[in-house]
Image (cartoon, rainbow over all chains, first blue to last red; front, side):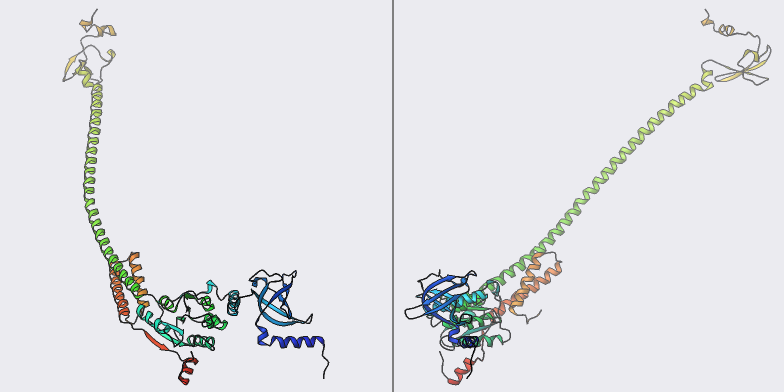
Length: 409
Length: 75
């Protein structure tokens, strides 16, 4: 025997309680009482029925599906442990639902909330489907028409595919384990680029495997993107929320998995038309390019004519300018010639004046003192000369003026 | 031209050729050779669709072994 400390006993109890799988994950129904809230926002309350009561704590208010108040009948999910400080047994609640909901619904809502919080349903992590899958894994049961429906649809729509069947029971004990193994087998298979998880319609109980956590995690960790097609359009399973794409039925999953050959054929046909159209356009573009070049060449010839005409005009203008330049200068030359001739002695002589030269001294006689009576002189007139002799002298301008009898007064 | 192209590869190449042709800026020789390749790819795509047959294989899972051993369906 041994004497234990209080802490040793409460610690031992805690270990016992927390290793019990039932107490680690259970639903308890009861009425809420003694509700209080701590400063930190934790809710403390008691769940009770006619016979007994249980202390409860809810750390996260976010999990509340209804406003909690004393007197309300609820079903709470959580784990049982011991609060060692006070030595009290406590129910650590993580989810509270109103009373009156079936256990499967409760479990569904609980797992949905939990996985949603973990991010398994995040839209951001949904993977795109391959546009042209080559090897499609199919996780379904060997019984029923589901697989042959899928095979028929895919064969009709897009037969360029290999379906890789990974069989599993889809309801009852072992269904969730089988689905997990079927996914594992596909993960180990080369080249699977898409997985269809399918099951025909059934009751909530029959579809239950698709609401189990390990199936959800198997879908989440599938290497290839997953399309779920479980039950009918109105059935929503946890598997649908985790899958990369939810199809309302197995047949719809098959349709969403592959393109339709008639769409592809019309796509190919439209590509053919585009090829022809663009090539024709290329050719006609070049033809009009050639046409344009030719027309440009043609349009260049009149240009040459225009330049030629321009050159002619310029030449004409130049010769005109040159002509008037010459005329002007000719005129100048003429007037200068006239000026020149006005200054020449010949012109003076022709007006009746004469040049007298002393025959001995050869001086041009311009003053009376240059000559003596009897001197020989040469007289030059406009058209010749003659010789003479000085016969008389008279000094003074008066004597010269008297030689012009007509002007005599 | 590669006859071993998958349908997807052939279709992708075909779409790329159509885009390249539509973008223009090619020599006539380039355009002609792309046109020929594109028409050939379109033919390959159509033939692949016409002649393909769905293949089905089955993985060996624990469940399937159980069926074979017991000779009965657990469902």
